Image 1 (spheres, rainbow over the protein chains, first blue to last red):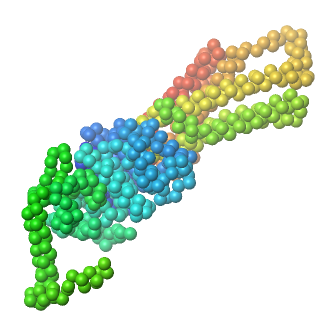
Image 2 (cartoon, rainbow over the protein chains, first blue to last red; image 1 turned 90 degrees about the vertical axis):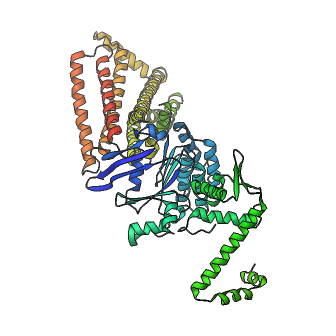
Image 3 (cartoon, chains in turn orange, purple, yellow; image 1 turned 135 degrees about the horizontal axis):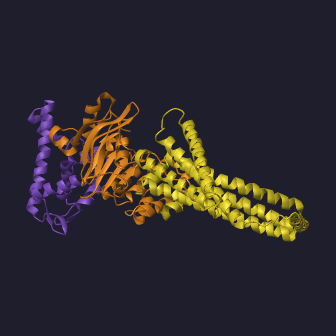
Amino acid sequence: MLECREITKKYGRKTAVDQVSFCIEPGHIYAMLGPNGSGKTTLMKMAVSLVKPTSGAFYYKGQPVGVDSRREIAYMSTEPYFYNWMSAEDVGRYYQDFFEDFSMETYHALLERMELDPRTKTKAFSSGMMAKLKIAVTMARRAKVYLLDEPLNGIDLLARDEIIRSILEAANRDVALVISSHLVDELEKVVDTAIFIRESRLADVCEVEALRIMQGKSVVDRYREIYGHGGEQTC
Amino acid sequence: MEFNPALPIYLQVMTAIKREIVTGTLEMGARLPSVRELAVQYAINPNTAGRVYRELENEGICFTRRGMGTFVTEDAQKVAQLKEAMADELARQYLDGMRRLGITREEALRRLGRFSPVSVLEEKGE
Amino acid sequence: MLKLMKYELRKTGFAKLVLLAVTALSELSYLLGVFLKKDQLMYTGLSVLIFGASLGLFYIGIDSLLVFYRDLNTKQSYMLFLIPKNSYQILGAKVLENGISIFLSGAFFAALAAANATISILYVGGLREFLEMVQKMLRQVHIVATIDWGIVIATFFLILAVWLLAIVTGYLAIVLSATVLAGKRFSGLASFAVYVLLERVMALILTQVYRVTGPGRLLAGPILCIFVMVAVMYAVTGWIMERKLSV
C-alpha cells in the first residue's frame, strides 16, 4: 500500500537515507527502530512529501506520494508545530477544515482521555501536553496509514497507556500504523513487524512473533544484536 | 499482564485466558471479548489477539458463532481436562526445575509435603 | 481556497488590528480637534493618520512576509504543508489575502482622507477661504484647476499594485532562500540581492510599457502589466515550492 523503492536523501555530502526499500501493508502495526539520526524521521517525512527525495520515491497505492496521498496518510512529527495563537479547539477546527477524515467527536473524546482543556492556548502548553495534543489530533483522523514519530516521548506512564489504546483502536484490516520509537520495550506487544534502520540503510525487517517462536528473541534482543553495544536503554 | 517479551505473546495470553476459565473467573459458555477488545485489554497487537482465539478454538477451549462472538466452551469435561493439563504442566515444570538444581525426585516430592496451603499463603502475605 | 485565506487572515490579523486601532484613535483625535476647536488634537490626529496610513500599509506588507518566512522556516510549516493542498493553492491564498487586504486598506484610507478633507474644508476655519483664494489665483492665470479624478484613482491603484508586486517578489526571494539557496553561505544576502535585481528588472519593464502605452485609459497599461508580473512571480514561486521545498 505504501512503498518506498530505493529511496535516498542527501543533504550536501551527508546521506540521511540510503537506498531504502520496504513496503507497508494494511492490517499491520510496524515499529520503525533505530538510533537518533539513523534516518527514520526523514523517511517518514518523505512518505508525506514534506521532504523531497534526492532519488527514488515513495508510492501510495501505486502513485507517487504528493498532495493527494496526504488525504489518507496521517503523519505526526516529533516536534510540536501548532500555531501558538490557537487553542486546542482551534487546532481541531483547523484539522476539520482541511481533512475530510477528521472526527471532531473522536478528537474531543481523546482530549478528555488525556485531560487536555480544549480552550487553553497551545502557547501555554507544557511539552507533555503538546505531545498529547499531537497524538489526539492525529488519531482523531480516520486515515489509512498512520506514521507516528516518537509518539510516546515525553509522555507520562498512564497517558502512554491511553496512547497505545488509541493506536490499537485505530488498527484494523485496512489500516497500517508505523510507529518509530526509542522505547522499544513499550512496543513489544503492540507491533507485529519491526523495521530496523541503521546508518541510513535498511538493516532488517522482522515478523516479531516469528522471532519469538523460532529464535526465542524479543524485539529488544534483536535490536541489541543489530546495533551492538550502543543499543538503546529503556527508561 | 506480566509477560516475557522473548516468548510468544499469543501463548502467554492463551495461558492467562485458560487460567481464568479453569478457575471459573470466565464461566463456561461466557462470551469472550472481541478480538479488538482483547487487543486493547492486554495491549497486544490485534493479529496476535486473533491468533489467540484461533489457537484456543483449535484446542476446543472456545468456539466462535458468526456474528455473535467467541464463547468459552460449555463442555465441562473439556474444562476439567484443561485443568488437568495445566496442573500437569506446572508439576512437570517443578520437577524439571528441581532436577536442574540437582535435587533427587524423592527429595523433590518430599519438599512438597513441607508446604501446607496455609503457610504458603502466609508467606505471600495475603 | 477560502478556508486557506481565512487562516491567512488570522495569522496576519494582529498587525491589521493594531493598525485599525491606531487609525481609529487618531481619527477620533482629529475629529475632536476639529469640533472642539483644539488645534493641537487636530494636528496630532492628522499627522498620526498620515503617518499611520503610509507606514501602515508598509507594516502590513512586511508582516505578511514575516508570516510567510515563519511558515517556511519554523516547525509551524507542518501546519501548512501537511494538509492536502498543493503549493499553488497555499501561495495563492496568501497572495489573494494580501492583495485584498492591501486594496481594502488603501480604499479605506482613501475614503477616510476624502471624508477628512471634506470636514476640513467645511469646518476648519480659514481653510475654505484659503482654497477659494488659490482657485481664484489659478483662474486668473488661466490654469484650469480641474482634477482628473480618474487619474488620481488610477495612480492610487497603481501604487497599491506596485506594493502587491513588491510583496509577491518578496515571497519569491524567501522561497529561493529556503530552497535553491538553502544551506549555502550568504543565502540571506543572496536572496536579498535577487530581490533587488528582480525589482530593477520589473521597474525597467514597467517603464518600457509606459513608454509604449502612455497613461492611456486610467493607466490601464501599466496596471495590467503589474498584474501580469504578479501572476508570473506567483507561478514561478509556486513551481519552486511544489518541486523543491522540503520543510
